[in-house]
Each structure stands twice: as C-alpha cells, then as structure tokens.
Amino acid sequence: MAKNKKKTPNEPVVLTEWQKRNLEFIEKKKKEAKEDEALREKLRIEKKEQIQQVEKKLESSNETEVTETEEVVESPEKNQKKQKLHKEKKSKTKRQIALIKALPVLLISFLILFISVFLMTPFSKIKDFKADGNSHTSLNSLIKQSDIRDSDYIFTVIKSASKFESNITKTNPWVKDVSIKYSFFNHFTFKVKEYKIIAYAQEKTGFQPILENGVRVKVVKESELPKEYLIINLTNENDIQNLVKTLTKLPEKIVTNIKSVSPANSKSTSDLIVIEMHDGNTVRVPQSQLETKMPYYLKIKKKLKEKSIIDMEVGIYSTTAEIEAQPVKKVDANADANKKEKTQSTDTSNSSSQTASSSQDTTTETSSEAEAPVPVETQIPQ
Image (tube, rainbow, N blue to C red; front, side, top):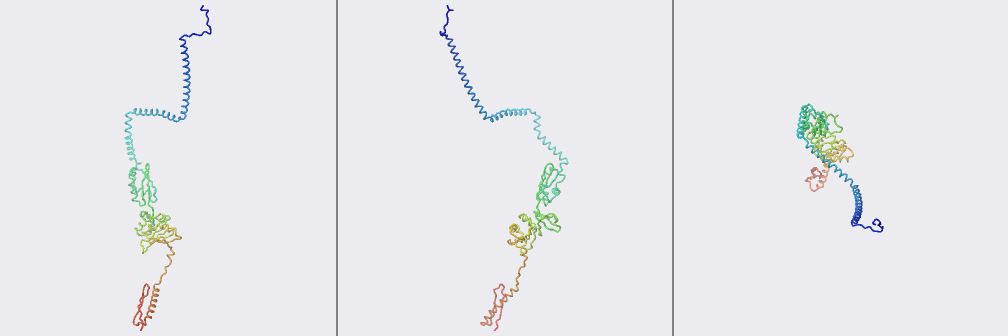
C-alpha cells in the first residue's frame, strides 16, 4: 500500500529544523561573499588611485630621489673604505711604524750627506755671473770690485751677498745701487743701477763726466760725447758741486736743454752765471737763485719770438744781443759846465748893474740854482 502512494507536485516540501538552519547559513555565506567582493573591488580601486598619485609624485621628485639614492649608494662605499683603512692601520707591523717615525731623520741625514759630498767636489765652486743695467761698468770689474773669489763656495756667495754688494758701491763711482740675484743651479746676476751724467767739465785731455752725485769719473774723448751734452766751465770745485746738486732738482726739460754754464764775471753779483741753451737763448742768473728762478724759463720761452737774453739778476726781463750791442749816448760834462758858468755870469752882471747907483763900494755874490753852483764875485767901479 505504501508503494501505491504518489507525491503530488502542489504538495509543499516540509524541511526539517536542521535543513532550515543549513539554508540560512548558506545564504548568509553568499551574502558575506558578495560583501567581501564589493569591499575588495573598492579597495582595488582605491589602491589604483593611490598608485597613480604616487607615480605623479615620483615624476616630480625624480631628481631628488636620484641624489638620495646616490647618497645611499655612496654611504656604504665610504663605510667600506673606512673599514679598509682601519684594517690597514691595524695590519701595519711594528717595523713599518718604526720606519715611518724614522723617515724624517733619514731624509735630513741624507741631505747632509749629499751637501757634504757636493762641497768636496769642484762643482761647488763653479759660479756663472751675468750683469743687468750696467752701461759704464763691465762685468769683470763688478766681479773684481765685489771681492768674490774663485775659491768661494756657491753657498758663501748666497749667504754673504749683502757684503759683496756693499763692496761694489764703495769702490765703483758709477754704481748707485746693486743687488746680487741667485738662480738655480749656480747662476748669479748683478742688478745694477748707475748714476746719471749731469754735465761734463772740459779738461786739457778731453771732457770729464760729472755724475749726479757730484763725483768726477774718467776723462773721455770728444768723439765719445753724446749729441747734446752740458759743459760746466766753472773753476771753483765747491761751485761745481753746488751747481750739480741744483741741476738734479730742476725739471728734466730744462736740464737737457742747457748747453753750457760759465761764470759771468760780474762785479755787482759775484755768483752770476751765464747759461747757454741748445735752443739759442741765453740766461743770466745768480747761482744762489738758480733753483727758484730757472723754472720760469719754460714760461718765458713760449713768449719769445727770437733768440733772446733772459736776465734774472735783478727781477726777470728779456732782451736781445742787438739791443745790448748798441752804443750808449755819452753826455759831455765839460760842455754842460761851461753852459752853467755862462748863465751864472750873465745873471750876476745884470744884478750888479741894477745896484750900482745905490752903492759903489759893495760887492755882490750870486749863486745859480743848478746842482753844482759856481760862486762868482764881481767888483762894481766907482
């Protein structure tokens, strides 16, 4: 009978309590799975957006990141080098440490040994000399006057250079200043500064140069003189020395234009000198006033139209040789005296004739108003 029973489709399925709970659990799991999927999708989208933002930031700060990465790379390298150095220091043996400490002593000892051996050789005394700035002094005379000997060591010349320089300035009148310069290996140069020639003094055997310090040097021939030179014709040595000192203080344009200086032999001014210029002008000026008055020559020269004589003895004025050569008109003193006597005699005769009627025994004395009065006495007849 049980086999004949059939289930109808409209008949509801009756679930047990366990089956219902099972279905609820399955539906809950599906719901949670959907929620998890939605959450994952949301997280994936957020991460994608974050990655895009990070990429933009990386592009903008690419340079800074490169430098940072380099520093990061270098820092371990530096650390490695430090570690290696530290290891090397630790790895040095006692022998190496002792050698390093003894190295300065060894170098000094080797240098002393080298110098000692060098001094024993003839090369330590071989010296090569040159001169610079010398026009009136030869190299051989400089070496001789310096008192440098062939037996002197190179180090002796270097050490005592000031002594040798002093020897030259004391013995050579041309040398104003000298210095000995050393250059490796054995070369020495005399740097010479000489005195200038201010003037020449004419002597019987030629012309003697006078330097700016007033010293006279060896006489030279006329053929050895420059194109333009100054001749001093003064005889007193003190006057020559004072003149040279004054010329060194005058402007160079004036000194180079002076041809000769000679005494004027003036009775009124004992130190009056005559200066002949290369431009043809002549200046007369007291030697004591040469420094103050001679600079005016440059201004006066611009106003001159011909060769002139500038007289600076008393004041300053210009004239020419033609004017000074003209004869001066002389006044006859005897003729003037005769004229005065005639006028005086006529005056006395007139006065005596007017007074004759009043007194016959009297005499009249008259005097003229001239600079040299001549008294005239006349007797009136009775």
